[in-house]
Image (cartoon, rainbow, N blue to C red; front, side, top):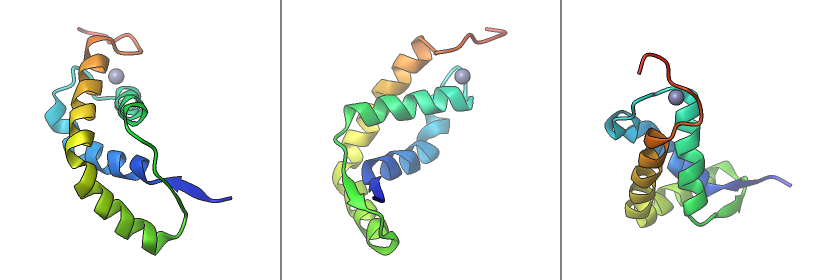
Length: 92
Ligand SMILES: [Zn+2]
């Protein structure tokens, strides 16, 4: 079975765009993935079959529909990770 969580694609894309604006104390991959995971846990999953053409169209539609939710949850997630990173930050 090949299914994809569309929400994951949408959040990943949004995170790439927003990451620099989130003003994180640490911008390593671990923190980025933590924000991604926390954001995704707070949002509904949207599984679709892995058909590339359809996926792109649906991801775009979903992006518009959920943009406010995605950005809100991402900003909450970034605050959590910024306050309590899952690894020790050196020179801080
Ligand atoms: Zn980090």
